[in-house]
Each structure stands twice: as C-alpha cells, then as structure tokens.
Length: 517
Ligand code: AMP
Ligand code: ZN
Image 1: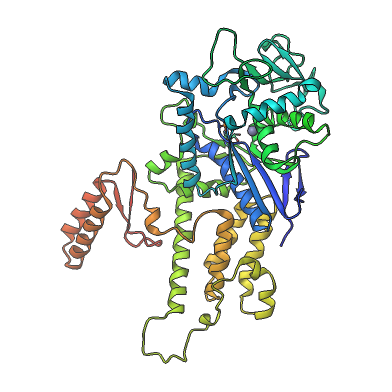
Image 2: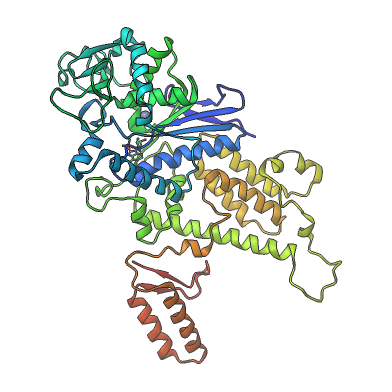
C-alpha cells in the first residue's frame, strides 16, 4: 500500500503520516455550535473528517475519533467579541438553552446519518466537561493568564510563536484577524482571549458555573483543548476543522496546549483544514429564511449522498462552489454507480445460482470458479493475487490507482474515477470485482453496496402525485401503447407532465420517470 501523505497546515506541506502510538490514529474534530441547524457548508467539514477517518481505518490504523458538540461559550465573533451564540438564540426563541442545544444536536445527528458519516468513538459535549475546564484553567492560570473584570484572559505573549498556524502578520503580538486591543479594557495583547467569561455583576446567565474567578462560563477555545486532551491524550495525531479555524480558534487552542504541556508542541502532530463550500446567493446564511440544509436538499428530491459525492468530487483543500446543477450532476453520477453495482450483483447472483436450464452441470461459467466472495481489497493487493492468480490484473490496477489517490492527501476526486473504472470492467471475476468495489465504497462512504434504485427515488416535498399513482399511470400508458391507442397514451403522458413527472422513454440508466420540482 502507498504510504499516507497528508497536508499539515502547521508546515503548509505534505507530510508522511506516522502515528504517535504505533498502529493507532487519534483524531479530534471541532464540532458544531448547536444554536441553529447546520448548513451544508458545515456538513462539508464533517464529510471531510469522516473521509479522513475512513482512510485511516482502511490504512489499518485503529481509529479513535472525537467530535465535540459546543453547547456553551462560542461567541458571535470568533475573536472573543459579541454575545454567546447559544444565549442569543435562546433569548430570541424564548426557550431554555438546554432545549435549544438538544434540538439542534439531534438535527445535526440526523444530517450525520443522512450523509453516512460514521459515529465517532466519542461525541464530547462541552457542558459535560466544565469541571475539567476549570481544573485546566487553574493549572495554567499562574503562568499564562491574568484576570480582568470580564474574565480570565490568556496572555498570548507567554507562549512561543503565538499564531504561527495562522501565519497572520502580527503587530504587538496581535493576530491580524483577531480582536483589537481596545475591545476589552486591560487586555495586554490584542490577540489575548478569555478562557473564563465572568457573568457580569447583577446578571444571571442560563448557563453558569462557580469558579475561582467567579460565576461564569468557559471560553470556546478552552473547550476543545480540554476535551481533546481528556479523550485522546497530548499529543494526538490529527486535529481537523474548517479553514476559518486556522486563523483564531486553532491558534488559541495551540497556545493553551503549549501552556499546558510546558513544551513547544502544538498538541497535535497534524492540523488539517477543509476549505469552504461557497454559495453566492446568500442562501447558506443561517439568517436567511430558507437556508441550505441537508433537509432542504432532500425536500427537493435529492438523495443526501449526492451531496456527499459532490463534496468528494472536489479536493477538500479547494473551495467548492455549490449549485443545484452541480448537485443534480452528482446525483446522476451516484445513480450510475448504484445501477452499476446492482448489475454486477445481479450477474454475480446468476453465476452463483444460475437459472435452471437444460445446460449440463459440467458446463459452468468460468467466473463461478472465482470463489472469493469474502476477498478483501487488502488480499487483492497482497498475497492472494500471486498465489491464486485468479484476480484479474485489471482489478489490481484500479485498486492501486484508488490507493495511490487516497494516499495522496485524500485525493477523492481521482479515487472516484478509479472506482468507476473498476465498475465498468467486463468479463473479469465478478466476485473479486464486487469485493474490491465494496472496500473502495467503505472508504468513500457512498453506501453503494446497500443503496437501491428505490432509495434514490427521493420524493420531493412539493410533489403532487404519489409513486403508486405514477406506476399505475405508466402501466396504463404501456397498455394503451401496446393497443396502438396513441391518443390515450399521449393523454396519460400529458397528465403526468402536468403533475411534474417526466416520462423517460429509453433512458440509458433504465429510469422510467423522474419528478421535476
Ligand atoms: P460552527 O458550527 O460555526 O463552529 O461550524 C462548524 C464547522 O463548519 C467548522 O469546522 C467550520 O469551520 C465549518 N464551516 C463553516 N462554514 C463552512 C463552509 N461554508 N464550508 C465548509 N466548512 C464550513
Ligand atoms: Zn474546536
């Protein structure tokens, strides 16, 4: 197998992945702030982290993945200004923060499931770790923090190379993208940030805890340092997040990790960032009415895995422009793959138990001899090929192309084409072909082995007609055509068109109809 190389934002270079603990991969992903539904851009970050995890598993590492849920502490401005996002939404909706957090966490988990993102080893909920956060803050307070009226602040001048990850120009130790010094009176450096925010005198917050610095709540940056250390130990292998986190949130986590470990290491060997999904009309903004959520894609008749495929068609470090046409193209591509797998499965089933005919039992198709129903991709790459010689070299070639692509900083765009090439091969051991496709599918997470044509018929919310009605109408049309009653068959077709159903005579993918909404 090709050695895994990943782009490390710390060095801005591709580096060979060598685990901290032999045979293991420990990964921490910054999770959502659950004050609202995630938009599809947010979900790109988790498709990326999930694909990374799948690749690490495929490469043989025992994966421990942590994704956190931020239910306290994230302000409306990453650089320590504004209101707490959770408090603000709770006030707007006149609901308890705990209810808000529960509702949006569940909605996020629905999207995780819809996009076939694997369950991490731990979902760490920030509010479960507040006592640990207070202990952590106490352990670094003397050397690295100072107290102001509004909270306990981290002095970014007390650690070496503060902000190196962001590569921002610094003035007076300030992160160019960070806060300005005058925003909080008494701050020593512009980039200094609160690790504990005191509840202002005379106010009560819905979420507040006692601490040595008074009643209050933890700072957002503190949360991830504490939970990653608690669940993965320092240093761990890979820390992921969206590219915006490279500027403030992750430099601040690194500063805390440095303070905590009294060393020069950042806490994780690799810091990896996905680029943004861009949508120019503003529909992705959570403040717009109907914003782009996974559920909206489903309501419009798209299968959510078409969106996963859309993400995987781009490199995770490239910006990806969202369009409905692009999503439609990805959906058609997904359908082709699912139909391709279905055809192979049908061929395989036929070979294993051929239909009863008069052919003598001694004449069995060659492919039945390839018994490797349980063959795995690794076996295809390893000894089995040489020993048995029954796996076509063409399968190996696709498998190698796939492996080379994903090992090259997760080049999923190329890996998908390797899978498609393998799907299109004819007259090779179909069992081996399916086994290799199943392993590739495990890495890409498109669920090709399980999805059926029926699953892909997602009913748009606004559809005026049910599937059964369509099928009945189509059967009647078929009868009319058979009886050469073209007036009736055209009338049925026109009626279907009026209800948004496009009748697809002779569609190469074998789809008889689709709903256009
Ligand atoms: P938040 O809930 O705001 O903390 O964001 C959750 C994750 O989504 C973070 O890793 C962000 O960096 C990431 N993210 C936010 N907007 C986008 C976007 N448009 N495209 C890709 N990732 C994003
Ligand atoms: Zn984080």
